[in-house]
Image 1 (tube, rainbow, N blue to C red):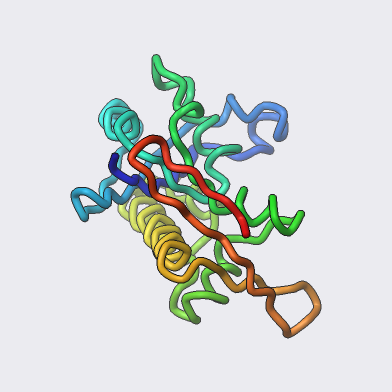
Image 2: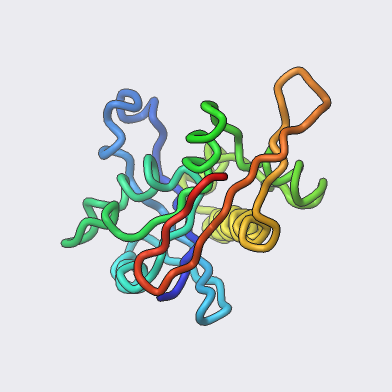
Length: 190
């Protein structure tokens, strides 16, 4: 089974659709992904979502807050339940252990160094879409996938991530063990 690291960007924001209770009203502008089997990055604009769906159906999905955001927004585009596919959500792993969330940017800087962070924000991605700056939108989404992949690679290699603490210089060494199986992959925290 392939591992597919993915991220989506959207055309609109929570404010545009009336808040988080209307998540399914948010529209996808682009999906980017990295396939471990093909060792290649991909991008899919809204008219190419079917191709992403075909890749996803044969893969373990890897993302950051992807179970509660990306997959739920993508559901309306497929005849299958993308949320039911095998999934490793890095933020869920952290939150289940620590009881709190950490941004991908903060996590990347703590574990990958200063050059490992995000290049913009989700609000910038919406602006890129609205202004027709599709090259910037694609570049931003691909960078998020690259960062997520590098964080996932660390989990696979070393079995932990460094988690910054609020208002303290000290970091927590959080064990996260990814167990690869032939059947749908599972994870467990130590």
